[in-house]
Amino acid sequence: MNQMEAGNGKPEGNNGDSMYTSVAEGKSRLLKLLLAQVIHLLLVAVFLSMSSPVKNDIAYVPGIFAVILGLISLILGEFGRNWSRISFLKVFLIDSTLSSMISLAVIACHIYLQKVQFTSASVQIELYKFWK
Image 1 (cartoon, rainbow, N blue to C red):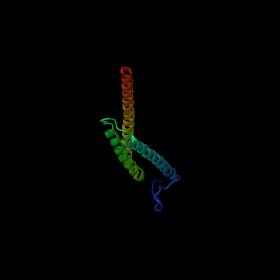
Image 2: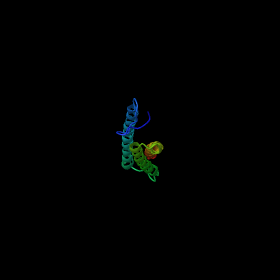
Image 3: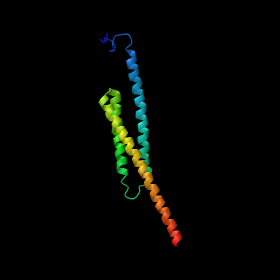
Image 4: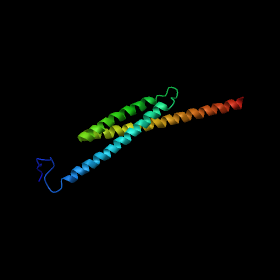
């Protein structure tokens, strides 16, 4: 039963095709996940390049690190998808999670810093008007 047919490399037996169908479905779901991560990384890169840096804003270093880590995880995910390597897919899972968490933290930190800077600027304007 478990012997391979010489012609097509599929196992002999009653229904070996369901295994191959489920693997193909899993690979197509992974492709959609990889495309979603590409869109996420592009949005993060656009945000980092378009946002005006606050004075001595060190939040850009982790943001750039998150984009690079995301690109590495995309490469590993694609290798794991094409070659069906579980070790690559595990590293892809960890790397993409870390990349997403770091990029979201950088964006939240940047938005918070801009809000604080805007608030302090408006308070200074109000104080200037008050003492004038």
